[in-house]
Structure formats: C-alpha cells, structure tokens
Length: 272
Length: 334
Image (cartoon, rainbow over all chains, first blue to last red; front, side, top):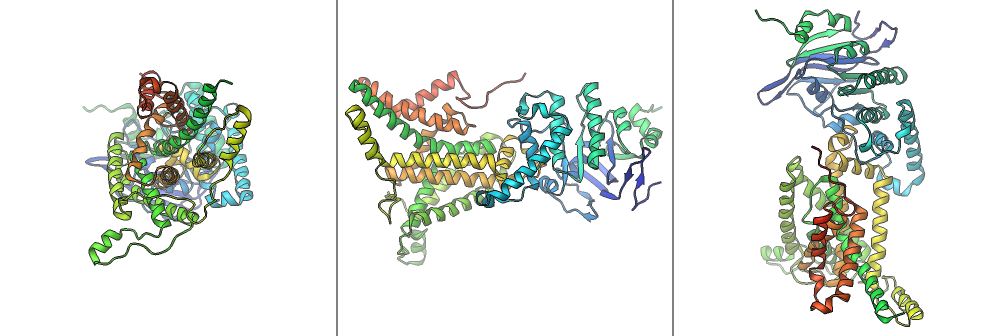
C-alpha cells in the first residue's frame, strides 16, 4: 500500500504526500553506549508520525538527531530530497523544523505573546539597521508576524492568557504555549517530544485534539514521541517502535499492535 | 528656605549625576550577565581599554608603537593626524566589536556549559590580558581625554549656567553643577532609551532576550547562541566605551580607571544583577546616598565616607534583600 513517491491515503481519507524527511541507517553513540543503532525510517508530508518505545529506547535521542541537537556518528539525514550536512540546532530550526521539549523550554520571563512571537524570529528578515532606518518595512513585518501569532493563539485557545508571564502558568497550558511557539513559524516539520507527558486525562484529550486540529487545519507534518500507547494509536498514521536503540516495528497502528516483537517489548517476554 | 536644606538639594542633584556615572558601568555588567550568565569582571578594564583606544585613535597614536620601535629600531609614535571625535568613536566601536568577536571566539566558545565560577575566573584572566594589551598598544602614561578636541563647543553649553541662574532666582543661591555631569546624564538617558528600544523592538533584541531566558529554547526557534553572544559583548563594549569616555573626561585616562568596576559592584547588589532599570536606580541611590551621607554625617566622623559608604550599603542589602531591588526573586524549590 505504500508507494515510495506518491504517498498514500489514510483510513479517514486524508492524502499523505511524498517523503519530507528520511533517516538512513542512523547510529548514535555516547562513548561506549549505543543510543541508536542503525535505524531507518521516513516521514511523509501531511502525516502524523509517531516514535514509540519503552523508557530508554532512544526515542528522544532520535528526535534530537532530527532537530540537530545531536549529530549521529553514522548514517544520513535526508530533508526535502537533499542530504543534510551536520548542523547546529538553530540552523535546523531555520530550515523549517520546529520542536517542543519533553520538559518544556519556554522563555519563563516573557509573556505568552512574546514567547509565541519568538517563534517568528526566523521569518523576520529586516536587519537591525533597516529596522532603525526604514521604519515602514519593519513595522509591516511586525504587524504581519503579530497577526500570525494571534491566529495561532486563537487556534490553541490561549487568548485569555496572552499577556500573562509564562512562569505563572500551570503545566498543561505551558505545553500548549510551547506548541503555539513551534507552530507559529509555519514549520514544514513539527517535532513534539512527549507532548502529553505529565498531563491528566482531560489535558491529554485536549492536547490530542489540538494535535489533530493542527494537522488538519494547517496541513502540518508532525512527528511525535510518546510512550502512552493508547494516545499514540489513536493519533498517528504510522508508528515507528524502538527498543534498546533498535527499530523493532514500523507501520500503521494496527500493524504495529499485532507485531510480536512490539508486544514482547511492551509486555515483557518470559525467558525460560 | 533654610540654607542647610538648599545645600542638601545641591548635594542631592550632584549625587544623582555621580550616580549616572556608576550606572553606566553597572549597565555593562547587567547586559552580559543577563544574556550569558557570565559575571564579567573585565567590564571596568573594557571601559579603560575603550577610553585608551578612543584617545589613541583621536590623537593619531600608532598602536603597539613601543613594540614596533623595539623590534625594528624605528622611532614612530604618531601618524600625525587628529581625528574628529565622532570618527574616533566610530573607529573605537569597530575595535570593540572586534574585541567582542575575539573574546567569544577564543575564550567563551570553549567554555560553554561550564560552571559560573569558571566563567568568572576566565573574565578575571581576560581583565589582566586586556589591561596588558591596552598598555602595550597605547602606552602607560596618563592621558587627557577631551571629547571636544577639534571643536571646543561640542558639549551642551549653558545648561549649568541656566541651572545656576534659575536656582539663584528661586533660593537666592546658585547651584553648581559640572557641565560634564550634565552631558553624562543626557548621554546616559539616550543610551538607556536606545538599549530598551533595541531589546524590545528589534529582531536581534528579541533574540537576545530569548537567549538570556533559555538557551535550549532559543536554539529551537532558530537563534544562534554564538552570534547573540558576540552581539551582547559588542553592546557591552559599546556601553564600556561610553562609560570610559565619560570617566576618562572626568578624571583622565589612566589605569586606575579599571577600578571603577569595583564601584559598580555595590550598584549591582542594590539593583540586582539582572535588571537594567535596577542598574540605573541602584547607581542613583549609591550616588545620592554617598554624597548626602558625606554631607550630613561625614563631618562628624572625620569625612572620606565616600570611600566606604557604597560597600556598607551593599552589605546591608545583601543581608536583608539579597536579590536586590529589582532582581529576580530567589525561590528555592524543594
């Protein structure tokens, strides 16, 4: 069912496009520890791609490879049909890959709106002298960015806390602000590191809805990490399963669910 | 109005002006500390270096002339020109940006993620390195710094006269305020306004605030830490230049200028290490406080209280309000 160039159609009828990002034989070591071992998979345009696995499986390392926080010792990262040289995280961000963090990395001293506006930094090209001299253009750019920010803020239903300093917000809302900041840059690939970690049931449902809505409304390609199996299976179109740094499964949620290796990894297997 | 009160008012005003000078130095500390968590011990030496470079360029001194002459047996000291202050300032800014780049490239890029105390030690090293370099480049003699080298009326004239006349009209006693202090105040106001506008309304300013707040998050929205740190050191270098010129014009460009950094410490204790308004208000409080204290209490205890008043005040603050007036509150989560 998976056509290499054309993409596929999901069960609910969404069209999934070509490959946006492809990981080829990625191996990542920290000293003698092999965090990721020879893993390959791809992420296609418009899909929600999940990476799951038990604790310590190397999921976060994988996300950090994609977002440039780690550079793998072996393997190739292909982005939009081009091989990507080793890059700094900020360069990756400038290429249109946005991310959130497992333990939230927001600018605590700034307001929600300011935080979201930083997500537009890569879209502001007026340099400092032009901003000082040519007021008109910088102003136009600021207005445009502000509109985009307000739209995302409305969309994620955080209008009521726009001016609140982030440090005063509860955990669930912080996660949403972080999503807003990542989303406002109109990324071609959005990486979510455990978007539902530490949330209660209600917050998880909200977050799931927002992730689906974002994908639906903006057509954003999303790759997410999660270890809550239930959530992942409902959300994602395709799932990569990792265990001890290796890939043990890759496919639709149903395919993965019935994969014996995956069942063993999650439920444990008796060694007798 | 009683005479004592009028004198006190004059002292108060002079204290405010002196406070502005302290605030100028403290500003440089705050900028770097906020953005990179580095307590830059070298800020005072940077002011000295900037002032020496400014005077050197202005007078057409050949940099490293002693070294060159010693090696090649030549006798060159001056290019033989005198540059306009504006040109000299612009050239010094270029030098300070180059210094910022070098500091980031050769020192702090290698120390990313190190303990604050290690970074602090590095800035002490930097302070001595810079002091030596300044000596080698421009020579150790005391120099006169005159912003109005080519144009004697470039300081705003007449404000001190106007104040003198106005206060004479009101109180029958004319206040004396140094023209240079007035200039320093005007420059400081412009500088602070420019800094605030820069950090609030420009892309780079926003990126700078982002880096100051959270490195990882800043990276994830596409901000290059390296670039921002060079920018921050450049801005701090520029502030050092302004402080250096003002202090240099007041007391001559000499190596003791680097000790003004010590006077900035109590200012920071009061204002907090992370607050730009704090640096200004802290500077003003120290300036006014030490002048009024010297005026009111000084004669009773033999004077010279200005030498220690600021430090004792800072000590009191450390005991009762360690985060300073405006610093971020220290909350220990258990």
